[in-house]
Amino acid sequence: MAHVEILATSAVQQRLGRCEHLVPYIDSNDKTPITDGFIDVYKGVGRRNVDITARLPVQVKGLTTHTQTPPTTFAMTRTELSTVRTHGTVLLFVVFVRSDGSYFGEPKYAILAPYAIDMWVGQTPRKQKSVAVPLKDVPASSSEIEGIVHIAILSQRQRMFEAVSGSLLDDGASITIHSAKPFSLEGPMTFSPEHGDFVVEVNTTTGITVPLSGVLELRPGSYVERQRDMTVRCGEIEYHGATLRQVDARSWELKPSAGITMSLVFEDERLKTSSIVLTQVDNLADRVKDIDFFLRLTDLGSIDINGGQYTFEISQDQNPSDLRAVRKNLGRLIELLEKLHVDARLIAMADIDSEQHERLRYLYASVVQNRSLSADDGRTAHVFERLGPWQLSMFVLPAGEPGMWKYVDPFAPENRHQFKLYSIDDHGQRQEITGTVYDGVEQVDLPRILNLHLDALVDAYRTIAELPETGFLANQFVLRLIRAADDEPRRREELLDAAASLNDWLIEEEPESIPNTLNRFQIRARRPQGLTATELSEIRALRREIITSAASTAAVLEIGCAILLGDPADIHDCAGRLTEKELEDLQAYPIWNLVSTPAPEIESEP
Image: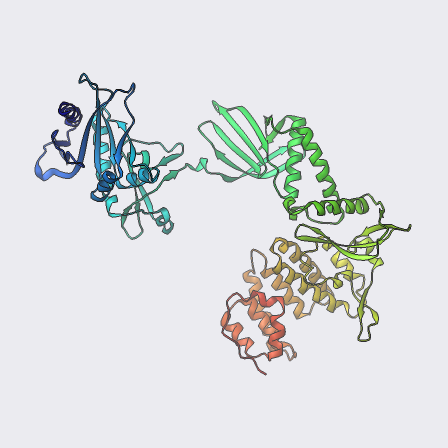
């Protein structure tokens, strides 16, 4: 076997001897298990001792093989790799020799760097004693060999670290990638210690350089899915905005919605092939729009993207006939929701169980088709029909003939005259009370009832505007809508819009009302943009007006201004001037929800 080691060492020495900045010292008779010598690296070609910049341990293995092709891996024991991991990087050379002494393929190498060892060992089953180390051909170019040695030397720093994660980048640190070969960032690049002659280092904001473990994936901006200002249209169905990402040098993926994926393949900057795939998303409104878009495409065969016409192929596994049947069933649900003024964007199809689907069919027959429903044991009742987490508030009333019934939407303007509000007095007697159908809604149900017809809310109160209680009732419902908006984020804007409309009507009726003015500001404070500088100035002016007034509610109104202005210390100071009862009542109002910073415990006046 000695001649194999000599032949192997000779092959490696021959390659390294061509490198101007490298001097190898390798003993072919060295029987040490980890290293057979080292390579000195010089900064100049004079090779003076003072010019030595680094020393890299090497190991050379000569092996006789009878395989048809040279092996691409070299087996090392876990113990051997653990020793290398402890002592630092070793540059391994493996030379395969035939039985006649001729070389079999090119000399091969592997950089036994600590992070690479960690990955190889981690991917090997625990019961397996040896680990397959991947090998690469030693390049013929001396500059490329010097590049490999340079990377191996840089990787020696990994010995001082365990695993350094990419979380260091969260603090604004930068990265440096050292590579033995040039690489291009025109496409995605993956840097993994498992199979790369490179070192990735993190340069922290404190000036420390740390080797990065794990896999680093770099993608050019075009390969990252990004929202684009695009218009995609097919017939009358149009999407504004889409996500776009590059897949490879010739292919792009365009998504005008979560359910529509388009693949575009270009050749010489011209579209060569295109295809579209439909995925039925959970949201009802989006699902219906996507299906309509897809079915329209089957009729027209082309799509308009930013004004350009493109022909698309339909995915073979998506049958338009099946989709038309699905669309017909969804269409009935959409018709019902439109009749009840329900926003289909709130509906998730996965939330509707089979029992609810059956109940919705009855509702469709009664409300949309105006058909009477048969039920021998039916009775007049107020019912909540479930629609996922939501509710439809309906009344079941006689339809004229015995045993026949119908659903009636109490919030629809054309039905309001059929209903009155009653309360039960202390003697158990029913007494009619003033109010609209909205005043009969329990607060717990308000954010969940979808068929409120909030676009007709103001008209409902306007019809009883001559009654003295109307202003108070409308003001209370404004507050209830605000509270409901706080309780149900999914309907926040819808409920705030309704509160704003009703409150604006109240301000028209009573322009000098300070509570209504405060409600206008607290509604605006809940909008994404918050209060403007001008509005904050108006609140300060209103506060000065309140302070100088002699109103009995001045202290409560003042703290409302303080809450809107958002100074915790000011809020605490104002609260200290309230009675216990005033503070308790205030904390029940929705404006207290705007107190973002908990104040110290308030000692109010008794």
